[in-house]
Image 1 (cartoon, helix red, strand yellow):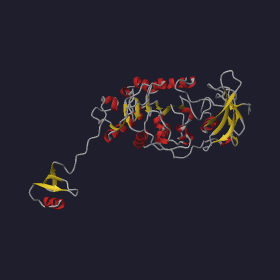
Image 2 (cartoon, one colour):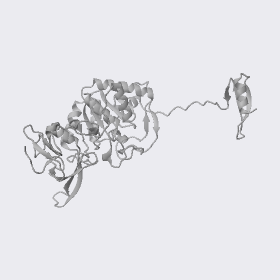
Image 3 (cartoon, helix red, strand yellow):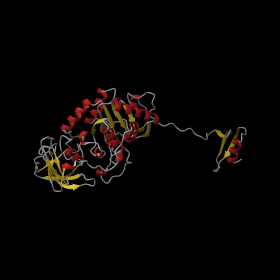
Image 4 (spheres, helix red, strand yellow):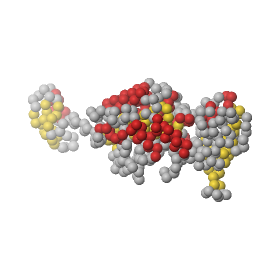
Length: 415
Protein backbone atom coordinates (compact mmCIF):
# COMPACT_ATOMS: atom_id res chain seq x y z
CA UNK A 1 0.00 0.00 0.00
CA UNK A 2 0.98 3.65 -0.42
CA UNK A 3 1.69 5.78 2.60
CA UNK A 4 -1.64 7.62 2.32
CA UNK A 5 -3.56 4.33 2.28
CA UNK A 6 -1.67 3.02 5.27
CA UNK A 7 -2.45 6.15 7.31
CA UNK A 8 -6.10 6.05 6.25
CA UNK A 9 -6.41 2.41 7.38
CA UNK A 10 -4.88 3.28 10.71
CA UNK A 11 -7.34 6.12 11.29
CA UNK A 12 -10.27 3.77 10.56
CA UNK A 13 -9.29 1.73 13.60
CA UNK A 14 -7.53 -1.23 11.99
CA UNK A 15 -5.36 -3.27 14.31
CA UNK A 16 -1.78 -2.19 14.94
CA UNK A 17 0.70 -3.79 12.60
CA UNK A 18 4.28 -3.44 11.52
CA UNK A 19 4.13 -1.86 8.09
CA UNK A 20 6.84 -1.34 5.54
CA UNK A 21 6.64 2.20 4.13
CA UNK A 22 8.34 3.33 0.96
CA UNK A 23 8.53 7.12 0.57
CA UNK A 24 8.64 9.11 -2.67
CA UNK A 25 12.44 8.90 -2.82
CA UNK A 26 12.42 5.10 -2.58
CA UNK A 27 13.62 4.96 1.02
CA UNK A 28 12.24 2.00 2.96
CA UNK A 29 11.50 2.04 6.69
CA UNK A 30 9.34 0.06 9.14
CA UNK A 31 6.72 1.92 11.20
CA UNK A 32 4.09 0.62 13.62
CA UNK A 33 0.65 2.03 12.90
CA UNK A 34 -1.83 2.34 15.78
CA UNK A 35 -4.93 4.48 16.35
CA UNK A 36 -4.09 6.98 13.64
CA UNK A 37 -0.50 7.66 14.82
CA UNK A 38 2.85 6.32 13.74
CA UNK A 39 4.94 4.84 16.50
CA UNK A 40 8.23 2.96 16.43
CA UNK A 41 11.57 3.77 15.00
CA UNK A 42 10.55 7.43 14.39
CA UNK A 43 7.83 9.49 16.15
CA UNK A 44 5.91 11.75 13.79
CA UNK A 45 5.63 14.47 16.45
CA UNK A 46 9.14 14.96 17.75
CA UNK A 47 9.43 16.40 21.19
CA UNK A 48 10.84 19.92 21.08
CA UNK A 49 14.36 20.21 22.47
CA UNK A 50 14.62 22.13 25.74
CA UNK A 51 16.53 25.42 25.45
CA UNK A 52 20.02 25.58 26.92
CA UNK A 53 20.05 27.60 30.13
CA UNK A 54 22.55 29.43 32.27
CA UNK A 55 24.39 27.42 34.89
CA UNK A 56 25.12 29.67 37.86
CA UNK A 57 24.04 30.13 41.50
CA UNK A 58 20.42 31.27 41.60
CA UNK A 59 21.33 34.55 43.32
CA UNK A 60 23.60 35.43 40.37
CA UNK A 61 20.74 34.70 37.95
CA UNK A 62 17.87 36.38 39.78
CA UNK A 63 19.22 38.56 42.60
CA UNK A 64 18.76 38.11 46.32
CA UNK A 65 15.14 39.35 46.15
CA UNK A 66 14.36 36.64 43.61
CA UNK A 67 13.27 33.05 44.11
CA UNK A 68 15.39 29.91 43.88
CA UNK A 69 12.50 28.20 42.07
CA UNK A 70 12.56 30.68 39.17
CA UNK A 71 13.67 29.28 35.81
CA UNK A 72 17.24 30.02 34.75
CA UNK A 73 17.88 32.49 31.90
CA UNK A 74 18.02 31.02 28.38
CA UNK A 75 21.20 31.22 26.31
CA UNK A 76 20.56 33.16 23.07
CA UNK A 77 24.12 33.67 21.86
CA UNK A 78 27.35 31.84 22.61
CA UNK A 79 30.52 33.93 22.40
CA UNK A 80 33.72 32.92 24.18
CA UNK A 81 35.33 36.34 23.72
CA UNK A 82 35.62 38.69 26.69
CA UNK A 83 32.88 41.31 26.77
CA UNK A 84 35.45 44.02 27.56
CA UNK A 85 38.97 42.75 26.77
CA UNK A 86 41.56 44.02 29.21
CA UNK A 87 39.06 44.71 31.99
CA UNK A 88 37.49 42.79 34.86
CA UNK A 89 34.85 41.23 32.65
CA UNK A 90 32.91 38.06 31.79
CA UNK A 91 32.48 36.18 28.51
CA UNK A 92 30.21 37.81 25.94
CA UNK A 93 27.50 35.11 26.01
CA UNK A 94 24.00 36.60 25.85
CA UNK A 95 20.84 35.46 27.62
CA UNK A 96 17.13 36.15 27.85
CA UNK A 97 14.62 35.57 30.63
CA UNK A 98 12.11 32.75 30.84
CA UNK A 99 8.73 34.50 30.17
CA UNK A 100 7.13 33.53 33.50
CA UNK A 101 10.24 34.50 35.45
CA UNK A 102 10.40 37.82 33.57
CA UNK A 103 6.85 38.68 34.64
CA UNK A 104 7.60 37.93 38.28
CA UNK A 105 10.74 40.06 38.16
CA UNK A 106 8.86 43.02 36.65
CA UNK A 107 6.32 42.91 39.49
CA UNK A 108 9.12 42.87 42.05
CA UNK A 109 10.92 45.73 40.27
CA UNK A 110 7.82 47.93 40.37
CA UNK A 111 7.40 47.21 44.08
CA UNK A 112 10.93 48.22 45.08
CA UNK A 113 10.86 51.38 42.93
CA UNK A 114 7.63 52.45 44.63
CA UNK A 115 9.16 51.72 48.01
CA UNK A 116 12.37 53.67 47.30
CA UNK A 117 12.86 57.28 48.44
CA UNK A 118 16.15 58.07 46.68
CA UNK A 119 16.27 55.98 43.52
CA UNK A 120 19.04 56.62 40.98
CA UNK A 121 19.85 55.29 37.51
CA UNK A 122 23.35 54.27 36.42
CA UNK A 123 23.51 53.62 32.68
CA UNK A 124 26.08 52.38 30.18
CA UNK A 125 26.32 51.94 26.42
CA UNK A 126 23.76 49.13 26.34
CA UNK A 127 20.86 51.53 26.90
CA UNK A 128 21.66 53.33 23.63
CA UNK A 129 22.42 50.49 21.20
CA UNK A 130 18.80 50.35 19.99
CA UNK A 131 19.22 53.98 18.87
CA UNK A 132 22.09 53.01 16.57
CA UNK A 133 25.01 53.99 18.79
CA UNK A 134 27.62 51.24 19.10
CA UNK A 135 28.75 49.80 22.44
CA UNK A 136 31.97 48.04 23.48
CA UNK A 137 30.75 44.77 24.98
CA UNK A 138 28.11 43.53 22.53
CA UNK A 139 29.34 41.46 19.60
CA UNK A 140 26.14 42.01 17.59
CA UNK A 141 26.27 44.59 14.80
CA UNK A 142 22.52 44.52 14.11
CA UNK A 143 21.95 48.19 14.96
CA UNK A 144 20.14 50.97 13.08
CA UNK A 145 22.42 52.88 10.72
CA UNK A 146 23.04 56.56 11.50
CA UNK A 147 24.56 59.25 9.31
CA UNK A 148 25.95 60.75 12.51
CA UNK A 149 25.71 59.76 16.21
CA UNK A 150 24.23 63.24 16.75
CA UNK A 151 21.17 62.01 14.79
CA UNK A 152 20.39 59.31 17.37
CA UNK A 153 17.03 59.49 19.11
CA UNK A 154 16.07 58.21 22.60
CA UNK A 155 15.23 54.55 23.09
CA UNK A 156 12.17 53.32 24.95
CA UNK A 157 14.35 52.84 28.04
CA UNK A 158 15.42 56.51 27.97
CA UNK A 159 11.80 57.62 27.74
CA UNK A 160 10.71 55.38 30.62
CA UNK A 161 13.48 56.69 32.88
CA UNK A 162 12.41 60.24 32.00
CA UNK A 163 8.82 59.31 32.94
CA UNK A 164 10.00 57.80 36.25
CA UNK A 165 11.72 61.10 37.05
CA UNK A 166 8.71 63.19 36.06
CA UNK A 167 6.46 61.14 38.34
CA UNK A 168 8.88 61.50 41.25
CA UNK A 169 10.35 57.98 41.40
CA UNK A 170 13.80 58.63 39.91
CA UNK A 171 15.88 61.32 41.63
CA UNK A 172 19.23 61.32 39.83
CA UNK A 173 20.82 59.76 36.73
CA UNK A 174 24.54 58.96 36.39
CA UNK A 175 25.22 58.64 32.68
CA UNK A 176 28.37 56.94 31.36
CA UNK A 177 27.42 57.73 27.77
CA UNK A 178 28.05 60.98 25.92
CA UNK A 179 25.08 60.90 23.55
CA UNK A 180 22.56 63.39 25.00
CA UNK A 181 19.72 60.85 24.69
CA UNK A 182 18.42 61.34 28.26
CA UNK A 183 17.92 65.06 27.57
CA UNK A 184 16.37 64.35 24.17
CA UNK A 185 13.89 62.11 26.02
CA UNK A 186 12.96 65.04 28.29
CA UNK A 187 15.16 64.28 31.29
CA UNK A 188 16.32 67.57 32.89
CA UNK A 189 20.00 68.53 32.74
CA UNK A 190 20.10 69.54 36.42
CA UNK A 191 19.51 65.96 37.57
CA UNK A 192 21.86 64.29 35.07
CA UNK A 193 25.52 63.62 35.89
CA UNK A 194 27.43 63.03 32.64
CA UNK A 195 30.38 61.65 34.55
CA UNK A 196 32.36 60.44 31.49
CA UNK A 197 31.83 63.57 29.40
CA UNK A 198 29.29 64.77 26.85
CA UNK A 199 29.09 65.53 23.12
CA UNK A 200 26.72 68.39 23.97
CA UNK A 201 28.70 70.19 26.69
CA UNK A 202 31.89 72.02 25.58
CA UNK A 203 33.07 72.23 29.21
CA UNK A 204 32.78 68.46 29.72
CA UNK A 205 34.76 66.65 26.97
CA UNK A 206 34.69 62.87 26.69
CA UNK A 207 36.99 61.27 29.29
CA UNK A 208 39.43 58.73 27.80
CA UNK A 209 39.86 55.37 29.52
CA UNK A 210 43.04 56.54 31.20
CA UNK A 211 41.71 60.04 31.92
CA UNK A 212 40.54 61.74 35.10
CA UNK A 213 36.95 62.52 36.02
CA UNK A 214 35.90 66.15 36.44
CA UNK A 215 36.18 67.01 40.13
CA UNK A 216 32.79 68.70 40.56
CA UNK A 217 30.99 65.85 38.77
CA UNK A 218 32.83 63.23 40.81
CA UNK A 219 31.89 65.02 44.05
CA UNK A 220 28.27 65.02 42.89
CA UNK A 221 28.53 61.29 42.13
CA UNK A 222 29.89 60.59 45.61
CA UNK A 223 27.07 62.60 47.18
CA UNK A 224 24.50 60.32 45.54
CA UNK A 225 26.60 57.24 46.25
CA UNK A 226 26.09 57.92 49.95
CA UNK A 227 22.40 58.78 49.95
CA UNK A 228 20.82 56.56 47.25
CA UNK A 229 18.73 53.60 48.44
CA UNK A 230 18.09 51.95 45.04
CA UNK A 231 20.33 51.88 41.96
CA UNK A 232 18.86 50.91 38.57
CA UNK A 233 21.88 49.73 36.57
CA UNK A 234 21.16 49.46 32.85
CA UNK A 235 23.31 48.35 29.95
CA UNK A 236 26.75 48.45 31.56
CA UNK A 237 29.32 45.66 31.77
CA UNK A 238 30.39 46.81 35.28
CA UNK A 239 33.98 45.96 34.44
CA UNK A 240 35.72 48.11 37.05
CA UNK A 241 35.19 51.76 36.10
CA UNK A 242 35.47 54.22 38.98
CA UNK A 243 31.79 55.11 38.64
CA UNK A 244 30.79 51.41 39.03
CA UNK A 245 30.99 52.16 42.75
CA UNK A 246 27.37 53.39 42.45
CA UNK A 247 26.11 49.84 41.89
CA UNK A 248 28.30 48.15 44.49
CA UNK A 249 27.85 50.68 47.30
CA UNK A 250 24.08 50.85 46.96
CA UNK A 251 23.88 47.07 47.13
CA UNK A 252 25.91 46.93 50.34
CA UNK A 253 24.28 49.91 52.07
CA UNK A 254 20.66 49.05 51.27
CA UNK A 255 20.10 45.28 51.16
CA UNK A 256 16.30 45.67 51.19
CA UNK A 257 16.32 47.59 47.89
CA UNK A 258 19.92 47.61 46.67
CA UNK A 259 20.97 47.39 43.03
CA UNK A 260 19.01 46.14 40.03
CA UNK A 261 21.23 45.00 37.13
CA UNK A 262 19.77 44.87 33.61
CA UNK A 263 21.88 43.57 30.73
CA UNK A 264 22.12 40.71 28.24
CA UNK A 265 25.50 39.53 29.51
CA UNK A 266 26.81 38.41 32.88
CA UNK A 267 28.82 40.88 34.98
CA UNK A 268 31.31 40.62 37.83
CA UNK A 269 28.75 42.20 40.20
CA UNK A 270 25.81 39.85 39.57
CA UNK A 271 26.16 38.27 43.02
CA UNK A 272 25.52 41.69 44.57
CA UNK A 273 22.27 42.36 42.69
CA UNK A 274 19.01 42.59 44.57
CA UNK A 275 17.23 41.84 41.29
CA UNK A 276 18.92 40.61 38.10
CA UNK A 277 17.43 40.86 34.58
CA UNK A 278 18.99 39.18 31.55
CA UNK A 279 17.23 41.16 28.87
CA UNK A 280 17.46 44.29 26.75
CA UNK A 281 16.95 47.60 28.52
CA UNK A 282 13.95 48.38 26.29
CA UNK A 283 12.17 45.12 27.12
CA UNK A 284 12.51 45.61 30.86
CA UNK A 285 11.66 49.32 30.88
CA UNK A 286 8.74 48.82 28.50
CA UNK A 287 7.24 46.13 30.71
CA UNK A 288 7.87 48.28 33.80
CA UNK A 289 6.03 51.22 32.23
CA UNK A 290 2.96 49.01 31.70
CA UNK A 291 3.18 47.56 35.21
CA UNK A 292 3.38 51.04 36.78
CA UNK A 293 0.99 52.72 34.29
CA UNK A 294 3.61 55.35 33.46
CA UNK A 295 2.69 58.05 30.97
CA UNK A 296 5.48 58.37 28.40
CA UNK A 297 6.23 61.60 26.57
CA UNK A 298 5.46 61.75 22.87
CA UNK A 299 8.28 60.66 20.56
CA UNK A 300 9.49 63.85 18.88
CA UNK A 301 12.63 65.90 18.36
CA UNK A 302 13.53 67.78 21.53
CA UNK A 303 12.46 71.44 21.68
CA UNK A 304 13.45 73.62 24.66
CA UNK A 305 10.75 75.19 26.79
CA UNK A 306 11.98 78.75 27.30
CA UNK A 307 10.08 81.52 29.05
CA UNK A 308 9.23 84.35 26.61
CA UNK A 309 10.65 87.05 28.87
CA UNK A 310 14.05 85.30 28.75
CA UNK A 311 14.26 85.63 24.95
CA UNK A 312 15.74 89.02 24.01
CA UNK A 313 15.87 88.16 20.32
CA UNK A 314 16.55 85.03 18.29
CA UNK A 315 19.50 83.16 19.85
CA UNK A 316 20.02 85.83 22.53
CA UNK A 317 18.87 84.96 26.06
CA UNK A 318 18.77 86.61 29.47
CA UNK A 319 20.20 84.40 32.24
CA UNK A 320 20.80 84.83 35.98
CA UNK A 321 24.43 83.78 36.27
CA UNK A 322 27.81 85.36 36.85
CA UNK A 323 29.05 86.50 33.43
CA UNK A 324 32.66 85.55 34.24
CA UNK A 325 32.46 82.28 36.17
CA UNK A 326 29.16 80.95 34.79
CA UNK A 327 28.02 80.12 38.32
CA UNK A 328 24.45 80.70 39.43
CA UNK A 329 24.07 84.09 41.11
CA UNK A 330 20.79 85.58 42.32
CA UNK A 331 21.63 89.25 41.77
CA UNK A 332 23.42 88.80 38.43
CA UNK A 333 22.07 88.77 34.89
CA UNK A 334 23.69 88.86 31.47
CA UNK A 335 22.90 88.33 27.81
CA UNK A 336 23.95 84.95 26.47
CA UNK A 337 24.47 85.68 22.78
CA UNK A 338 24.61 82.58 20.56
CA UNK A 339 24.14 84.25 17.20
CA UNK A 340 26.55 83.31 14.41
CA UNK A 341 30.04 84.82 14.94
CA UNK A 342 29.40 85.57 18.64
CA UNK A 343 32.43 84.96 20.87
CA UNK A 344 32.22 82.70 23.94
CA UNK A 345 34.63 81.21 26.48
CA UNK A 346 34.56 78.03 28.60
CA UNK A 347 34.55 78.97 32.33
CA UNK A 348 35.08 75.56 33.95
CA UNK A 349 36.78 72.18 33.48
CA UNK A 350 39.98 71.19 31.70
CA UNK A 351 39.30 73.66 28.86
CA UNK A 352 38.71 76.61 31.15
CA UNK A 353 39.62 79.82 29.34
CA UNK A 354 39.41 78.35 25.82
CA UNK A 355 37.66 80.76 23.45
CA UNK A 356 35.26 79.90 20.68
CA UNK A 357 33.09 81.33 17.90
CA UNK A 358 29.48 80.33 17.23
CA UNK A 359 29.22 78.85 13.72
CA UNK A 360 25.53 78.04 13.55
CA UNK A 361 23.31 75.06 14.35
CA UNK A 362 23.10 71.40 13.38
CA UNK A 363 20.03 69.64 11.97
CA UNK A 364 18.33 69.46 15.38
CA UNK A 365 19.06 73.07 16.29
CA UNK A 366 21.96 72.47 18.70
CA UNK A 367 24.66 75.13 18.57
CA UNK A 368 27.95 74.43 16.77
CA UNK A 369 30.89 76.34 18.22
CA UNK A 370 34.47 76.32 16.97
CA UNK A 371 36.96 76.45 19.85
CA UNK A 372 40.67 77.09 19.50
CA UNK A 373 42.81 74.75 21.62
CA UNK A 374 46.53 75.08 22.16
CA UNK A 375 48.43 72.13 20.72
CA UNK A 376 50.13 71.72 24.08
CA UNK A 377 50.48 73.67 27.30
CA UNK A 378 52.35 76.93 26.73
CA UNK A 379 52.20 76.63 22.93
CA UNK A 380 51.20 79.67 20.85
CA UNK A 381 49.84 77.44 18.10
CA UNK A 382 46.12 76.66 18.34
CA UNK A 383 44.00 74.10 16.51
CA UNK A 384 40.28 74.54 15.81
CA UNK A 385 37.74 71.99 17.04
CA UNK A 386 33.98 72.20 16.65
CA UNK A 387 31.98 71.30 19.75
CA UNK A 388 28.21 71.23 20.25
CA UNK A 389 26.07 72.93 22.89
CA UNK A 390 22.78 71.11 23.51
CA UNK A 391 19.63 73.25 23.38
CA UNK A 392 18.60 71.93 26.79
CA UNK A 393 21.39 74.05 28.28
CA UNK A 394 19.48 77.15 27.13
CA UNK A 395 16.31 75.94 28.83
CA UNK A 396 18.24 75.19 32.04
CA UNK A 397 20.12 78.51 31.93
CA UNK A 398 17.01 80.66 31.43
CA UNK A 399 15.17 78.84 34.22
CA UNK A 400 18.19 78.84 36.54
CA UNK A 401 18.00 75.12 37.26
CA UNK A 402 21.72 74.30 36.88
CA UNK A 403 24.50 75.56 39.16
CA UNK A 404 27.12 75.99 36.43
CA UNK A 405 26.94 77.09 32.78
CA UNK A 406 29.24 75.41 30.24
CA UNK A 407 30.12 78.71 28.54
CA UNK A 408 29.82 82.50 28.94
CA UNK A 409 30.26 85.45 26.54
CA UNK A 410 33.83 86.50 25.86
CA UNK A 411 32.70 90.14 26.05
CA UNK A 412 30.47 90.74 29.05
CA UNK A 413 27.07 92.25 28.46
CA UNK A 414 25.49 93.04 31.82
CA UNK A 415 21.78 93.82 32.18
